[in-house]
Length: 315
Ligand code: AVJ
Image (cartoon, rainbow, N blue to C red; front, side, top):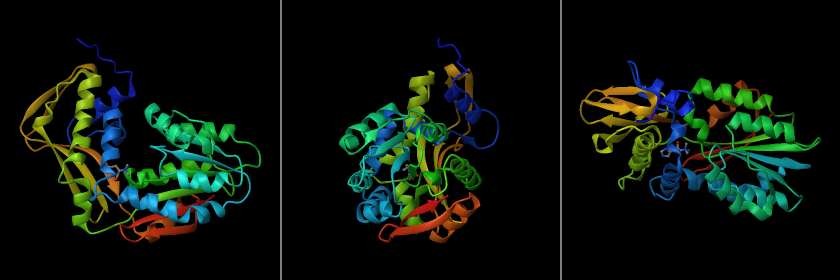
């Protein structure tokens, strides 16, 4: 039998999220183990999920303009490095003028390694295997005097935060930046409900597999006995809150044992676990969010076909 290991953060968060009354929930960052990251990568190729391609298209089309608005010696930090493919045009446009330091920050060593392979010759790559804010403190302590910093927060990951938490996060981030530094923030825009639901519940079931893998991961890492066939993926859109929610719905009343968390979690028939929230934005809301967090909106680029905005915020 596996001994409870309540000291690990994963164990603590699974325990907190699945015990007690009220909405059960699991933090969305645990979706991205190696299986989950591969499934997310597959999602980005689905015709129903245009977000990543829209993000990449803006960076591709406007790279010179984006980097041109930050003159002088520059270092680049990226929150959530991913595969690095999207970042390539920005680094290409920057490395023409200077030798460049690039700090990808990610909790996944696999993602960092992939991103290093993808971008190797373009910059001096310093991978940082930490959470976003811890990684950013490290970047702050490593940067050279007189060097400006461009922070990339792409892919609408900011949408995974509750609105208050997003402001809090951006405010924290700003305290780790210096005057004239830039933050390039990618945000998915509000669009018709049917398109959003198709994007988060694709007919091939890739998103369903991505979501269910979270339970498989808990089985693998925490010695749990989730039967994945007893849950199903559900995407909901709340138009007032402007957010998509991903849930895992229990098909029947059941009890699941999570050995390493020392927990037997009970699920009623139809009860759900909330696994991710993805807020969508109106273009005019981004400036307000930036201002509340102590940034100002310098420039904004739109992708109209899917509906995505890239905003350059300045400290
Ligand atoms: C990686 C956070 C941008 O919210 O759209 C994709 C994650 N979840 N399909 C998003 C995701 C389901 C994605 N982000």
